[in-house]
Length: 298
Image (cartoon, rainbow, N blue to C red; front, side, top):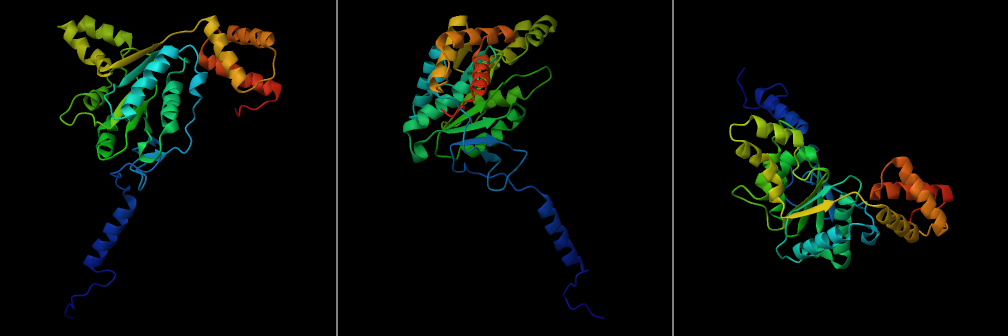
């Protein structure tokens, strides 16, 4: 029987079409090419969310009031001024917030973002995008998306550091200053880390001790921090600074406790934790509010 030129359900053209449709359904949507509406996002390239370009919107950023960050006034004023200049379209530096744990490094970045947006509207509002440490190697892809955006963006990586045999730091170096494309003028990069040079000391020492030219061997790894024009150090706080944090929180949340009793309990809490920091102060306030039967709604 002659072939009529039409294909039934089992004909080759129809079968190929069905296979193509099945593969299309299985394939993840392509990453978007534009920045969605919103003020805050988390970069999730693995999700490949349709229409979101891997940028998952964050409706409400978990932040504290800027005035509640005590003991870091110099760091606060410096980062705020740098961020305001950037938001106004003026030159500004990438910033590395490094030092002691629990002293408000990541809280400061989020609080500054909120403060800068306080009097800004619409497209003038600053965008905050968090990129996870494990996704640093996808940073060039994110920057290509942001390069086409008209809004100004703060890229934020919390607890950034690199271990032995980890080469993803090269993607960050190229994105910050190197590469033929360079960093888009509408983006800036803020990172927090417990390490000043983002590399473990034993790795740096090992590279220095085993290399033919120790200086050159170490240079590539420690020079990553040089890509940040602004270094802000956070150090362990003393008792007076710790109590200042406690008093600020207690006053802001109107906790009903006598000043002497507040001080006594705060010192006992720090002694039990074996540390004094902004994080310890906040944990004490949460515990105290619970014991007093009060909420922390502000």
